[in-house]
Image 1 (tube, rainbow, N blue to C red):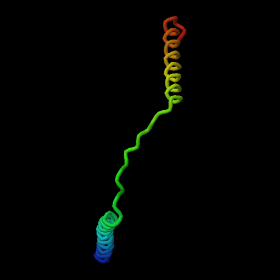
Image 2 (cartoon, one colour):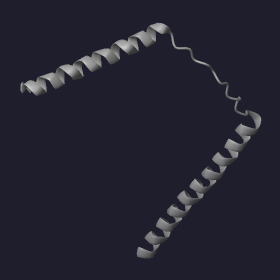
Image 3 (cartoon, rainbow, N blue to C red):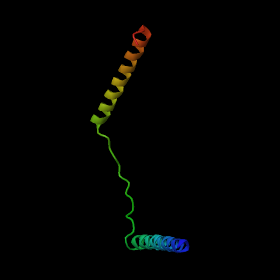
Image 4 (cartoon, helix red, strand yellow):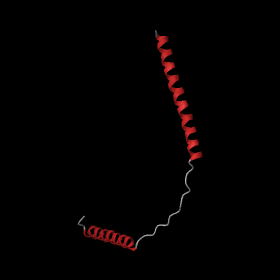
Length: 81
């Protein structure tokens, strides 16, 4: 009885191992076939122009951050924090 259970376990593990091995090789084959018949398109370098309003918004954000830092340091020096 014990050896039959070991035999069934090994048969099941062997079946799973065989299935996974076949699946790995089929995926590799499929990948090679897809790349052969449908190659990747060449990448195109796109130039991105930043609108002036965006740079103005960035400058406004930087100014707000610097103002907040200055206010925080001033409160620290006065001992309010």
